Image: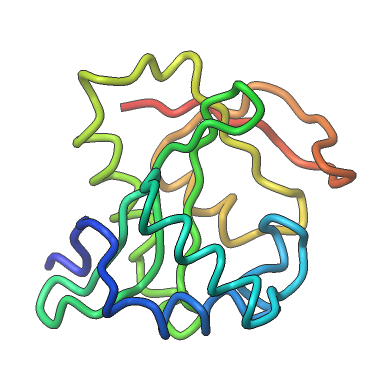
Length: 154
């Protein structure tokens, strides 16, 4: 059963994105490691709409915004990541979205150069990586958090 699809960000997604970015549970392992204010979230949304990087994860039937998944260049490094609205956690959507992105970008990306960092405290994301068969490359600290770097395998 398909749970999710990938698509571009739309103006209609604004309120769902702002709500997600303002949720401290979602933002625990992202960016500044805190919920964004409404103004910060609105600016983030406007930038993402103008300069898309990651794909939108949407419900396959209703097209409802669920989150983001994909690759974004950060400080000269290709960084793979995803984040989804808390109400969609635990349903297999993150793993499905990761599979879809890897499939979609399979011929465009040198996966050896893509970085995936998962903080040690982020047990759910570690389970996603393990479910997908991604390999731990090494452990390290990033943004003052201890975790593991993974290699995406197809």
